[in-house]
Image (cartoon, rainbow, N blue to C red; front, side, top):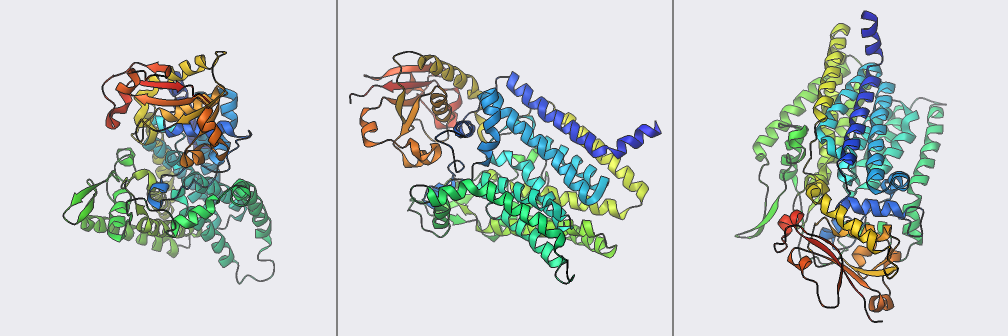
Length: 575
């Protein structure tokens, strides 16, 4: 028995990583067995992943909601998420391909976290990190573990990035190429990481140079190979973005981002404002300093959605659910005091690795706060998905303080502490097993899965007919904003081999510039469009209803789209 206990302690992080991987795999398998279907923005990821290695190969990410506040269409930086999904999608089909790809991505991150932290702090760091990772998995809930929506899919990878940066700052320079690779994936996948990801990598590089500044000849010999490999990783992972910027038609996405960031966009009819210091303090405190901190109860609403309301002096942003500025400052002060005491104690005992973790934490917190302060609040108000990195910084803070506590106690108490953390991680994984649907992103449209699956099946049957058109003009308007149907229907048309053209510049940036309709196509191609509610029931003159799902036939309501009837119509134009 004692030998068994010793083996469990020896391979503790691997056992926890294996258990976490099984929970992720189980959640994905159960979701597929229950009829998982990519809806809303998830279908766009399916669509563009299906374009990989075709004549419509994506060089950018999806269109960003930042386009609303900037007045200029901008995309997320790169297509690495599509590249990750592409092969499983080809091998397994749309639902299984996406779920398996994202589950494997998260499983890979789990094991890399264990590997990286074990290289820095041995078993203590690795077991603690795996226990934290297991709790993060519980925080996400079972259904986010295979969800491809960008803000959710980056939850675990950004945690890995912070661990990698810590490792490099602590002197493990061989991990620099991995750090650059993870940072590239995070930065390209969602624009909310545009500042924090590269800044953290730069901090790691500067830390390497600073440590070796006065070491004399040969000080940089250890760095040369990792640096060259990092440059190679960067060139490979950013090549598609550079091709789009310098060889694509029109203004490149990097130029568009520069213009958007410097006020060079068009007038949106709504003047966005920056978050500012007071609101940034309240938002930071909501996740880092005040309960329920970064746990599951706060994943959806620690930073609640907000709304603009008309006040005596114009529009005012209402932020219900956020603590007052005074309470927030007190909470952050207490957290800062705890961190300062723990950091000082580690410096006193000269624990280089844990001190490096505190330095990494301070840099990440500073960049996060500055990013919060300058983040624009557009007409949609505050949304937690735009600042999801705050949760991960709160997690890294918890992890760093835990490492300090374990380093400060006698070895026997450290072992007991690790066993307790391991047990807590197992409990978190058990609690993750029941189905839990976070109200984050496209998952809010989960009830629409049945109707979307049915409509896609009808479209599949229709376009097998000999008289079905092989090219269509798609009109995305007429059904409202933020609904779940249009994207899966466009994806299904492409799946059926139908050439899709659109007469909408923004949608063309979503689907690929080669799908912009020519004037001749606008006049001659059959027109396909989607309607919901009462408009789905009535068939207009000259139109053919090619797919229909009979849901609630009340008039369409943007606030209750999930239970409405939905139909796809086709109009054959006379060219």
